[in-house]
Amino acid sequence: MEIPHINRTAGLLAFGVMAVILMLAVYFTHARMLFVDAPFILTNILNESHPMIMEHRYGSIITQLWPWLGSLIGMSLESLMYIYNASFNVFYLAVCALLVFKFKEYALAVVMALYYTLMVSDAFYWTNNEIHQAVGWMFLWLGLYKYQKSRETPLMFRLISFGIIGALAVLTHPLMIIVVAFVWVYYLLEERPPIKDQKLTILFSAIVMMAITARVLLSVFGGWYDAGKISVIGESGMANVFGFGKATIW
Image (cartoon, rainbow, N blue to C red; front, side, top):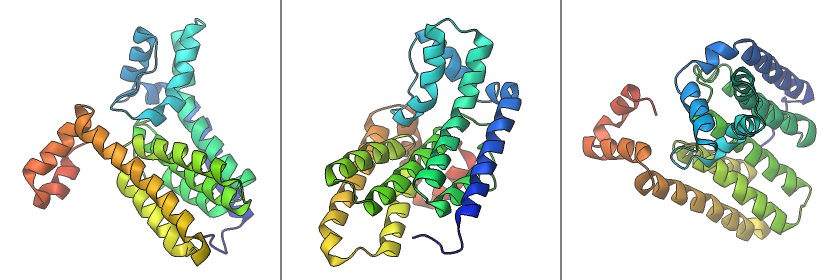
């Protein structure tokens, strides 16, 4: 799946882009933390004294953990605001660093940098939208899978990391059902595993399907927000799905 002309230089450039985005994120802390859901989530973390995982989107713990821990040691509100704001881009930069310096997956690093800049208009100011955190988990999931496969990591460790990180990628936002399914199928078509690996491919694919099934069940039966969106789609009919998507912020 590695694209020949995506070399280490391109990977380093992608890492540099993500580092610049982190610096800009810190500079625009007040603008980012006063927009849409960020102040709501941060306020609830402080008032309830625990992370506020909404709609079973468990991957958001990677950003909510830090302001919660900071509140436990009595940090000021402004400090907690800076910590929460930076935690998103620190996570993305850390994943990109692993892709470039550990996994040597330069193509994935470039695609990741493109996602958080050119391809998503609200990724910068709409900080806590779980789809962006889910995409970060997805890049970590695929990069680690490829790295462990190339290093012939013991199967048990591969299955555990693949299952946990893959589940975080899917569970963190319902739209990742489509994204992860597409990425996994695309990877298999490009990789074309040999006959001897087909049983393992089926096993890993089954893990992906279990994560997708869990997300569907949680969205339909486990909450109010996602279930409401899905019910509207069902009531409107497939003919109105695209119009519904344009008029609704998920």
